[in-house]
Length: 360
Ligand SMILES: [Zn+2]
Ligand SMILES: [Zn+2]
View 1: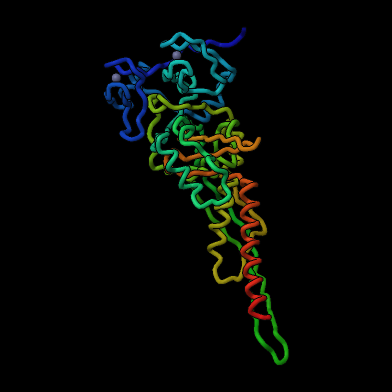
View 2 (view 1 turned 120 degrees about the vertical axis):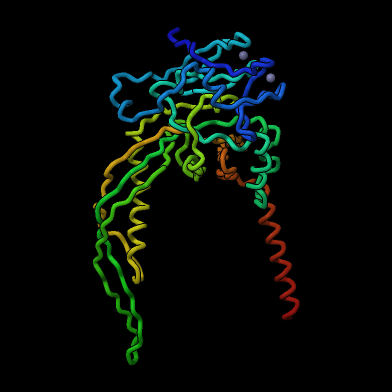
């Protein structure tokens, strides 16, 4: 067996009673559910890692490293119950499936792969039933008991790794503007279209463009769970992960930069288009803008992932753990949709019948 043993793991325990000490979204502190003791996140994290301060992720430093840790499955021994547990290559924090002990794998959040910042969870699992109900309220065709409260309150929050790019763009675009005039001339309706070649130059700076850094996550789902409020980013501390799941990145900034630049180019084009006023329509003919400089932060963002199997199909939902926004595609109950259709038809027939009676 060539599985690596993770030894540098931290179990966060209440110093007063030994029960798990977890990050509590409500108070923003580390809290013991058993005895109610509370501690500050930085105090607990610092004493757990035994180091005063650590640098976060550094893009150029990371590129210069000769070898990167391979992300293979590893095993660790739960220090509370002694079970040997397998952790997949990107797991950075989890709970022991046997004793519910909270575990943070230090080597996956320290050194060169330490996150720069984190948005801590604001919503707890107990908030999920309410959030999800609001999401599907009024959607007639939803299967009965689609999300069960018992399932929802057991869902664990996941810190998803994201790259947060800051980029400058500079250069110009060529645009074509149209002005349309319509008027009447004798017997004719005349439409005149005037074409204008326009040029706009500019330099802009974009900050906090998020791109998920996990190949396991669906890009569409992660894009739609945005926006996050990045003014609430705080320095990363290990303690925030306690009681949650966390993944480390497995796709690198160089590979994800094109996704970020595509997003910001679109916004840059829109911004320049908006400066062309007085035209019926404007479109871009040629974009000569370039990214001038880019920097990246490695951050962990709070998300709840909900999985649902319905009639052999898998549905995945995400809840933004900071804002409570719920995203995902709801299945349509085919039985219900048929009943609904027939219901509508029956009403239609009745109306026709009444009308016929009136006319004849
Ligand atoms: Zn305690
Ligand atoms: Zn255990």
